[in-house]
Image (cartoon, rainbow, N blue to C red; front, top):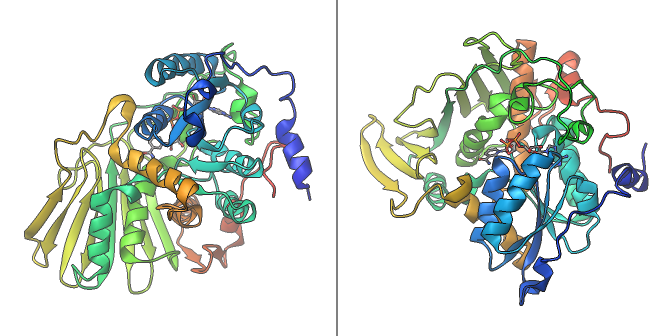
Length: 442
Ligand SMILES: NC(=O)c1ccc[n+]([C@@H]2O[C@H](COP(=O)([O-])OP(=O)(O)OC[C@H]3O[C@@H](n4cnc5c(N)ncnc54)[C@H](O)[C@@H]3O)[C@@H](O)[C@H]2O)c1
């Protein structure tokens, strides 16, 4: 058993001697800035820009003090844009261990690949920081459970980036469902569609000079660098990614679970395959998964390579009850529609089209609101909309779905904690192997 001190030592190892690329034009010089929380954004490519955008939208209460990425080119590009947009230059570093040592950092946001989410969040909690962690909050169920334990132990706020939990119209729709709008809600069906291209067959290649491949891999057992993994395509490799169910199912299944008022299911089934292309992609591109609760049920259909829309939307969910149904969406503006038992629309509510859903840098209004909620939780004790002990439930459910797909059989689940029952072989996939010296511990 490794001690906390040793764990911190692991994360401190190698940090000494790495210069923080801070600039003199420091945020600390801004008048009145002490009232605002200092944020460090970790992972600066795609989703990192949405975090920047959301922090800019909350500039009265938060500022970006640090930015961090293991890829020097990606970091430099982000640093230039951030300085231009913010009017000051956040300190910039490639090594999160350096950033976590800074006393003036109050909170970090994590937009790295999935295999880093829980280990980085746990390290941040141990360093006394609050954490906004992108979905999925973990790479495997054991790690997610450890993160929940860490949050309880270190008593800092941890919000998962399922931003539709902060979307006003979604909150309103779920509230109405809970208050009997469609009688007793018993079935919720989510979906997602996209037209992702083939990722081809990767070739071993020299690590690009700007990339710290060792730090990119971090907790994951080492692999030679290949040219079709970073950035983004790691999503489709089991060593680092978690597949479309976790990548996009997390959003809609989280809402299904919330609307039905359920936690872990009794049973999970999952069928699908890689049907569109033959390439390095290690997950399904088409998946149908279901969660059984005895008197209620959730199902999700994911199509990574076919953009056929349902109800005119790439993603969404329908909640069905004894007297009608509610269709909830968050793509291309947020809203919900109410249907009677025969399937005729009786009402609809849409986000005011004058409010742009997507703003600069791929941000969106629910993400801005989700950050506002996180900041208010830290500053004023406001209740988090997606606290980690809730966020971890949907993530674990979808990891169970991945395990059911890999095992090609139904899983019996303990509704008390989500663990797989009577199937030791499947239960082996509850945790992952770590690179020696990089396993997270409390
Ligand atoms: N909530 C949402 O709607 C939403 C939308 C998009 C992405 N995401 C999530 O955001 C995460 C990032 O996705 P992306 O598309 O931006 O991936 P990406 O591959 O484009 O970017 C990830 C970045 O993290 C960097 N990185 C890797 N290891 C790091 C480390 N140890 N420290 C600092 N930086 C590190 C990489 O160099 C890369 O620049 C994913 O987990 C994804 O699921 C959430």
